[in-house]
Image (tube, rainbow, N blue to C red; front, side, top):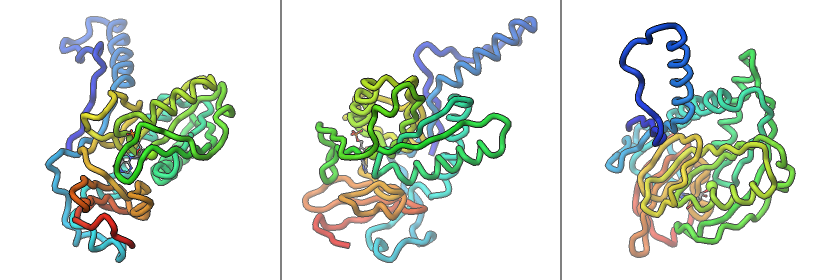
Length: 270
Ligand code: IMP
Ligand code: MG
């Protein structure tokens, strides 16, 4: 697992020589802060990551046979989410934020992120007024992303006109879902829109879209758990992986506190 800071194309490296005077020092500090705010940082889960031994963790009985290794322990998800909350409050602080949860997959990450933002609000001089909204989108059929992204429920987007909106998503794969949502939202003229996604998949199918805040960059596999599902299964875990093979799927689960993998038949019922 590695941390990554993706520099924007115009970002320059830090100055190696000490500042000549105080004015220069101040502008170097400002440049550095600007540069940090333009960086998209994330934790990278390598393609060859084997994860952790499942027997070291507690797994729900009904999924026990479908798991064999843990990739992202729940504690790591929580720690990373805490830092995302801090970055968001730093950038959007002082303004009213409407946090828009993309259901159903985003609900667990959303709940944890909101808790961390609330904790920051309670314990600092600066606080962010926070309200919540929900939208339900569907773009997946079984384990395949489709070109058709549908809004199938939730609050009216027109309520977001003039607001600072933070979209909270579980995972960005091709980027089509988020691009569609952003287009819909822009028609309602919000004041500002930022996107935070717990996961971004490294995939050649990506449109190139990157969220403003990213928790983890993960391999090109199908993930379940931590509210991410496979046909509604595995939401009661924490996140997972499932490449399609003839009639069966290799599943890797980030359960409530883990990610594991195992082969199981397409028709499996739980
Ligand atoms: P995209 O439009 O291809 O970026 O797909 C985004 C949406 O598809 C996410 O919001 C998820 O709901 C779903 N999705 C994409 N990859 C996965 C996955 O690995 N597991 C579960 N759901 C996924
Ligand atoms: Mg989603």
